[in-house]
Image 1 (tube, rainbow, N blue to C red):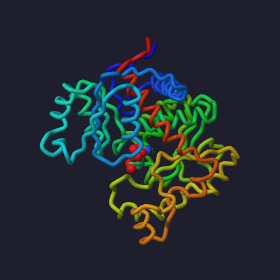
Image 2 (image 1 turned 90 degrees about the vertical axis):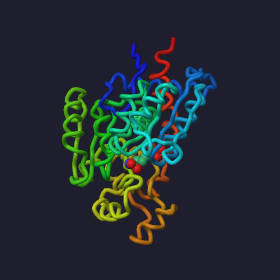
Image 3 (image 1 turned 180 degrees about the horizontal axis):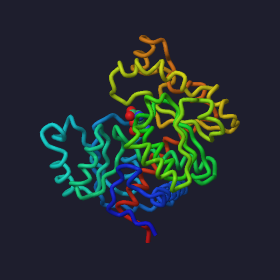
Image 4 (image 1 turned 135 degrees about the horizontal axis):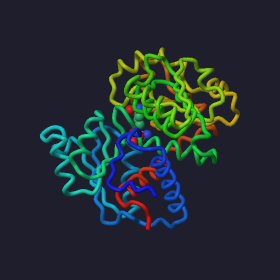
Length: 336
Ligand code: CP
Ligand code: NVA
């Protein structure tokens, strides 16, 4: 049996295929129990710290609500009202929090920060997104695909369109490769995941798992036959406007729109997006983009986002169940 007690969850490459599938199936069980009203709290009396250096809606709420469902208490820390990162190093913070808490959820910029937290705290640390990886999102996405199609992960194919030199691009390439999926990264070559840090290890994992990993600039070839088209925002949260501006023309051919969905040739193709999505311009940032470029839809059109093919809110809900699974598995371990 798989026992993940005491382990951190920092990036997909640290876990085996069996361990990742165990987390996905535990999440499915916890989801079922939640719906049936039979969930058993296994984290009663535990204390969890959340350190979020960057904005979040889904990830923070998932940690907080999941902890509450399981009987744990959460302390939310943010750089503005703590010493973290300004007066006190991450290494010292880790050693303090390790004396008080049972686990730490982190969201931030540098991946090195979450590695440092894990190394020096001595307790499980869970990565809720860094510049390089978004592993809890991957568990939610795999759960969403598996439950929607009723097939195991290695029977599924997905294409990620857009800016793949990102946490999501990296994580999709690796999770697909680990789980034996047919994964396509479709976007301009200049925005593909890093060769050494991502493509090489993913290619090696794909060879072992039987996955197919394709990187292509050709939308028609990249999406053909795919079960799911996925995308993400074209630059990371907090990136300067200039970065967005210079990418818009380059990435517009990779927008997920009705034509891209049709190009799969699959009438049952589904759409996924980790959210937030830029599809209707109904935000203050959307106002800026509209004023400066005239665009109200970037990586996905509202037509696709709002269509029956869109799984985005199931996917968002699954953040809760999968983050819960990670905390339960690494703190409580296998059920008796
Ligand atoms: N998908 C995701 O990580 O959402 P948040 O940024 O709202 O946490
Ligand atoms: N790639 C996005 C993900 C947001 C959940 C970002 O880094 O902002």
